Image 1 (cartoon, rainbow, N blue to C red):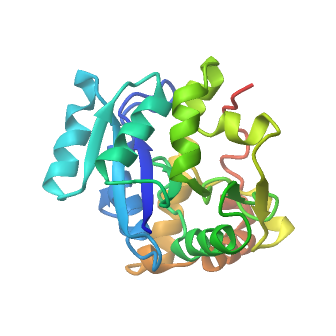
Image 2: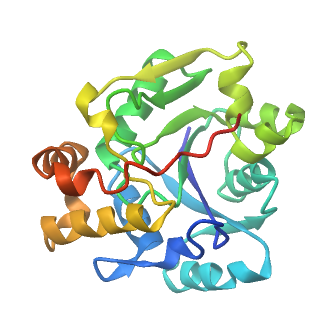
Length: 245
């Protein structure tokens, strides 16, 4: 049985176009994301699910230059693109899928592994997630069996379900849910995903403050830094998170 991580990524963004290729600490945002995912001890394969529109060609070229596995699919039907990527990565029944998004350059490998471990031990047939009541948005991690992904891809019909991939898994009441608590409640006030310019400014501040080894910093180190720098940590507090509702 394999653990396969699929990261959704695209150039298009109404609030911050081409954000996944913007520079953080001397490398593209998506490179930072992939570098940190590669530090996971439990992920066997990692693939990007890239939108197939012409404006995503620069992201495709980056993936090829970085020898990063990728698949291309519908920009709007993200569920079908995600499922296609899992299949291209060789996923089959019995495998475990990790879902991440490419606008999270500080995703924490030790937290990814913690969610995978909790899922395999306690909820292997259900939907398991990092509880963001104890961590910032931007450490988001979702884990579920490939069998559930395949079923969802075939049966989900609502626009929200097709766009947000796991929406029907956690909203219809039929799938066992497990939230994994690994942090502190005060850390939930921070925001580390990149949707707007101020989000990017905060991540760049974190990278520059942590120094050359910023890619190796764990979630606790990052949150501790934010606690010590409240003026900087809240520069993006006005940004609203897009929801399926």
